[in-house]
Image (spheres, rainbow, N blue to C red):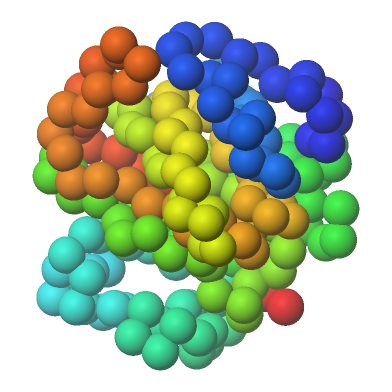
Length: 206
């Protein structure tokens, strides 16, 4: 399974939309249901920040950070937290075996929890991160919208649980990506019911 081609397992509704965005790759069923359950249980056993809790207490959503601490206020990396924990080894090794991080293995993980009615404003990831960004989705599906910065053209991509999204090149630097706050979303005749969603965003520090 080469990360640079179209060998992704594509199942479910709307999975071909990602091909419209240069540099974007969607790998469905990247981890098994058992792996997803174990990963979520491990994360839920650890402290969460946000919602008045450091770091980044101003956030309305809960977060966890590993590798480095990123400030959402200054959009900079503030602290070295040490290597990623061993329970992430399987996911990291699988990404590397797919050629997803050719420059260096990811050394930074941001975990975001989105409840019903929560989204994220369209943005381009900070330049303090490297050229490859991946997002592993757990729990419920959502629609992520990619908007080209110079033209405003929008592409809507359904992110199913256990899928891995990879951003490089134009997708990384020339498109904003965001998630709406809607509880229920419609896309190409399909209904997406939003619930708790946990995303694991892996990056490298530049």
